[in-house]
Amino acid sequence: MLFSIIVPIFNEEETIALFYRAVRGDLFLKQHDVEIVFINDGSSDASEDIVRSIAQEDSLVKLISLSRNFGKEPALFCGLEYSQGDVVIPMDVDLQDPVELIQPMYEMWQKGAKVVLAKRSCRKSDHVLKRLTARWFYKIHNLLSHSKIEDDVGDFRLLDRDVVNVIISLNEKNLFMKGLLSWPGFKTDVVEYVRPERHAGTTKFNGIQLFRLAIEGITNFSTAPLKLASYIGFIVSILSGFYGLVIIAKTIFLGVDVKGYASLMTAMLFLGGIQLIAIGILGEYVGRIYSEVKSRPRYVIESLLGCDEKKPD
Ligand code: UDP
Ligand code: MG
Image 1 (cartoon, rainbow, N blue to C red):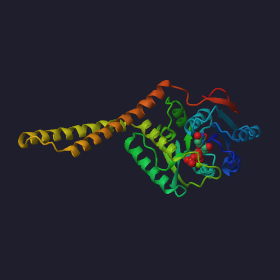
Image 2 (image 1 turned 45 degrees about the horizontal axis):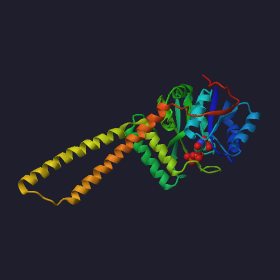
Image 3 (image 1 turned 180 degrees about the horizontal axis):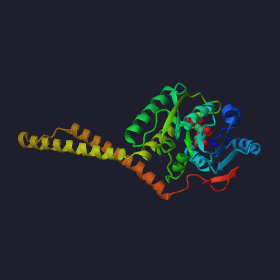
Image 4 (image 1 turned 135 degrees about the vertical axis):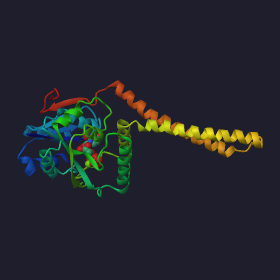
C-alpha cells in the first residue's frame, strides 16, 4: 500500500521544509509508505535546491522540475502522471491542506469510496469578495455543466489509482483540474475541515488569474454559453419581428412618424452589445479549439530526481 502525495511548488522556499516535516512527522503516515512527488513549476527561488537536498536523504521524495512556470494545473497533471501510489493525494505546500485529514480520508477509502473530497466547512480564512465570487462560480458552473463539482472543494482530495488512471488517460491540453478530478465520477465521500491560513509566503493567484481559471472551468465543461448566444438571438429576433409589425401598422394607419430616435438608438446599442458578447463567447471556444489542435505538450520536464524517465504505467 503506497500513498502518493503530489505537491506543485512555485517559489515556496519558506514552506517546503515545514511541509516535509509535517508529512514525515504525521503519526498515521509514519505507519505507511508515502512517496512525496514535488513538481517544481519553474521556481526562481531556492525551492528546487531545498527539495533536492531533502530528496538526497529520503528515497521516497521525488522531484520533477518543469522547464518554466506552466501553472498549477499542468504541474498537478504532471504529478498525477508520475505518481505510483495506490491512492494519490494532491496537496498545497503552504500547509493549507492539513496532513491530519489523510487518516479520515483513508478510512473512507477503506470503506469503499474511490474519491474522498476535503470540503471546507467554512471559508472564514477568505475575504468577502473571494467568498462571494467563489459561491457564484460554483453556482454558474454547476448550472451549466453536466459534470458537477462539489462546492468549496479544492484540489485536495484522495483519489484511488483507478480514478487517477482515468484522469491521466484524458487527452485535453487546456486543463481545469477541479473539473477533471471530478469528471470520472466513482463512489465519492466527503470529509469536512476548516482551511487554515497560508503558513508562510504569499498566494500565487490574484483576482484576474482566478477569473481566468473560472472561465477555463466553465468553457472546458460546458457548451451552454454558446447555446445561450443563439437563444438570446432567437428571442430578440422574434421580439423585433413583432415590433416591426407594430411599426408597419402604425405607418399605414397613422402616417409616417419621424420621431423614434431614442428607441432606434436603444435597439441598435442593445443588439450591438449582444452581438459583441456572442462573438466574445465564440472567441473563447475557438481559442480553446486552436490550442487543443496545436496539441502542444501540457508541460516540459527539465529534470527528474528519484523517478524514471518514462512515466509509470
Ligand atoms: N502553484 C504552482 N504553480 C503556480 C501557482 C501555484 O505550482 O503557477 C502551487 C503553489 O506553490 C502551491 C499551490 O500551487 O503549492 C497553491 O498555490 P497558492 O497557495 O498560492 O493558492 P491559494 O491557496 O492561494 O489558492
Ligand atoms: Mg494556498
